[in-house]
Each structure stands twice: as C-alpha cells, then as structure tokens.
Image (tube, rainbow, N blue to C red; front, side):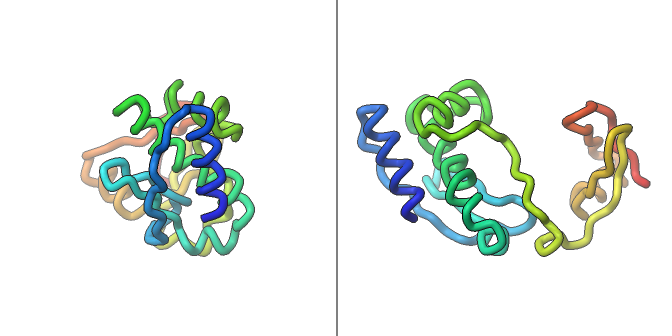
Amino acid sequence: MRSLREHLSRANLKLARNYPEPKLVYHQRGTSAGTAWLDAYEIRLNPVLLMENQQAFIDEVVPHELAHLLVWKHFGRVAPHGKEWKWMMEGVLGVPARRTHAFELESVRRNTFPYRCSCQQHQLTVRRHNRVVRGEATYRCVKCGEVLAAE
C-alpha cells in the first residue's frame, strides 16, 4: 500500500491532478503478477508471487499496474503498453517501463504443456493448449516470432 500511495502521490503532483487511490486486492491467480481492472479502478495482485518477490512487487509490479489505471484516467482507452503507458512509467512514476516480469513461476504454475519455437521452450496453460488442439488459436514467440509447436 505504501508503494501505491507514494507512486500515486508522485503522479498527482507531476500531473497536477488528484486521482483517487485505486482499490488493491489480492485475487490474481495463475502466472500473472498483477492486473489493472480499468472499469473497477482496481489493481489485483497475485498473493503467492507477492510473497515470493516482495521487493520486485513494490518496485515494479505496483507501479506497472498503477500506470495502466492512470493512463486510462488521463488519456482514455489506449494501447496497453503503448507510448502513453511508457511515458507514465518512466516520465511520471520514474520506473523503467518493462512489460513482463521474470519471476520464478513453479509455485503458481498448474498443468502446463511444453511448446517450442526456434529459440526457446514455452509453457502454455491448459486453456491455451486446448485452443491450439481445437484449431482455434496459434501462439507466437515474442522474441523470434515463430509459431509455437507442441513438443
């Protein structure tokens, strides 16, 4: 909560606004560290990953999700990690704009399925794996762009 309040105070000062404090809940599941729910003006944090990565949550995850809410309040609906979000992260909150975390996920990973591209192995969730099997979706590696294939 302190991290949230400090970053929000900094943003309000820099933006000359008085944005309210969002609701902070600990209901995020799976491998996501956190999510910003725009319409509810709420930040959901993964309690398991929070306990395992406390300082990273304070330094990175909380400001990351807060930036999504502030961008929504300030600009309306825009690309989730677009130029407005990057500006909010770096220019306003003073935090490096990273889209993903690098936390160890073994404790929160349920049934996953191994997939491969030319540069690395990936773990797809049951939901994504089933969508691939049914022919409803394909997934690409964000690094090399290759379509993922089941191992």
